[in-house]
Image (tube, rainbow, N blue to C red; front, top):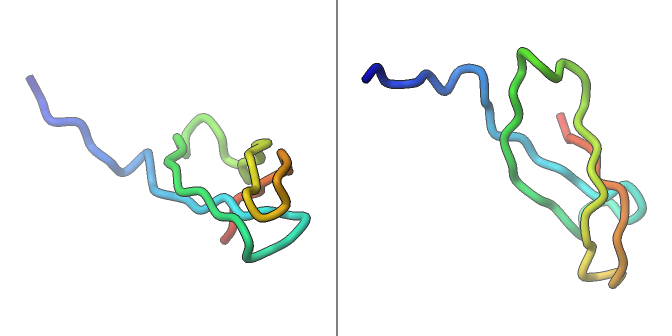
Length: 57
């Protein structure tokens, strides 16, 4: 079997939009399928609620 390349899945940082700097998540994304910034609703332990997290450049 051929070894898969990791070029299409770079590691990205998702940061909270309501309270920047309080909550960050690390994940990967497929650059070919999703070219824009990734947005997910994730849990912020400081605020103790689910908030919108956006990809940080």
